[in-house]
Image (cartoon, rainbow, N blue to C red; front, top):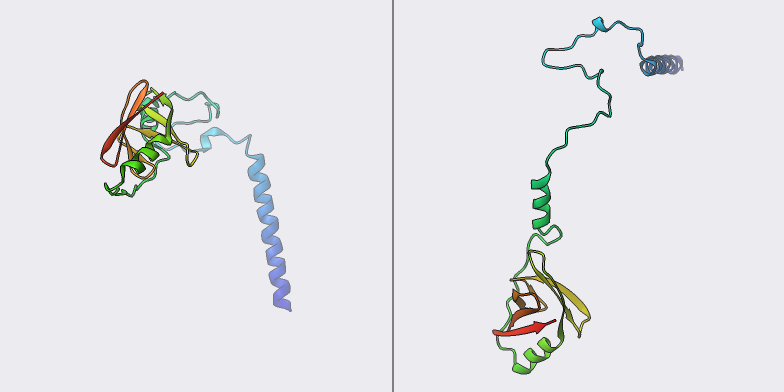
Length: 158
């Protein structure tokens, strides 16, 4: 029991000392002479500069260009799907007839917005990208998109 009381008193003294240390460090030494502080060579004093001083502006053009050209939300790994070239002519025409060219984004890289009427989904594709079970956008012009599907080429117009 005596050891527990001694430990309690010791912890209380440590608590008082740490509170005093925190109180002194918060109030600071405002009247302390500056020559008591040692500044190593190669370091400059920053106390003369305001904390929120205006920083030199850096050129972030290269960073911005990288972000604009890379597909940020694209998956890292794309699994290639192999489409069988044995689709019947009727299946090909049904699939192509269900597609509608909604719009074209002319800013490089050009993108076509294609809607599938059957599923109600829209696809934003670049040249060379595949969508909807192997349909590939071959060429995107101002008013049309050339697609390949099942070994045949089709063209959608605005």
